[in-house]
Image (cartoon, rainbow, N blue to C red; front, side, top):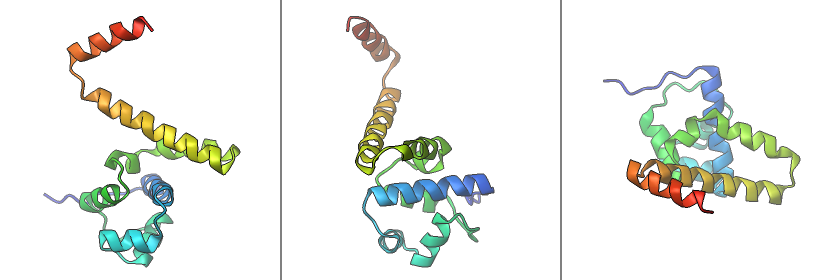
Length: 130
């Protein structure tokens, strides 16, 4: 089975924006990200600019996500960048804090998804008393 993904312009733009955002958040240069995933600086530049790439597959997306210490879904979710764009009215320090809080919330949501139904009922009951 071929695991190559088909990208439309909107999808390509989402991956581009999120890759760039998280790369900058991690203080990585395009060159360093490329080195870590086995791609050239030019390839990373094309990716972040949303240029059509000849081939990008799940393994590349997973490698980028792993290198940036994020879930693969964060690269593929256009809502991530919409939140980031809405933060542009804030100062850089406030934006950094907000982005860290958003990541913490996303991590918490991922943790909550792992809870069993019984654990969720217990948590819901406990929250009612707060």
